[in-house]
Length: 292
Image 1 (tube, rainbow, N blue to C red):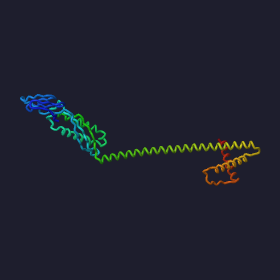
Image 2: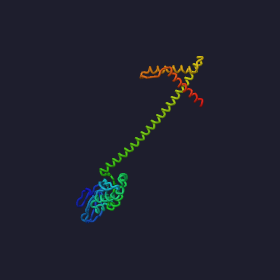
Image 3: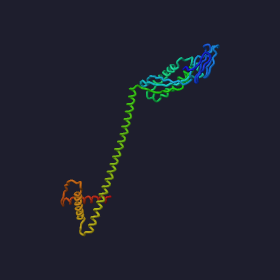
Image 4: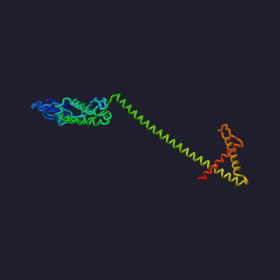
């Protein structure tokens, strides 16, 4: 803390941002500011020392335990300076101010940190620094020192604790990712089911309309042939139409390029069976329409 300066037996030169301590016969007399200083050796004046008023900084490493029994190391940066008006107290009261400040930092930190969990310590490290600053300002002010700032630079848990914290964090993130993935799969399944239901509904509507159109077409064909051919009954016309469609179907199967061998019952009796089935279906449809 002693600043560089030039002095001899009867004069001295005090540098900028410094203050000189002048004694008279070994007792403090006054403070001397920057510049040329004349001393009267006959009156017993001498320059006892020069103190710098610049800001000094040093780091304190503290090991302590948290509330959840985790040992951590705290790296604390302390910035302080000599109060110019109280430089005599700083010069005579403390021989090593850094050791005194460090002792108070240890005391305050070890009183506050054991009341916090490790997570709370990371979240509230500013509160710990504030508590240290308030305590040091109150104590060190009486010795002529002003505490400019306390910075909690780093909190270093044990390496095994850091590894465990990282694993917990990774597990939580994986769990959250699984939840999101499951929700996404659920949405896809629901949408797929809704799409399939909608497709089946529309397919059913299409088939119903197709069958209705076929029925209407057959009805119109029967009426047209019955009106055009005298003496033809509705049954005969229906049999004729069914035979025609039967042979059209066989022709389509034969012309298909992707067909395989298909065995179909063939003969007048089978055609009659098909026509009877269609006739019965048309009669049931007509009855249902009448009922509506």
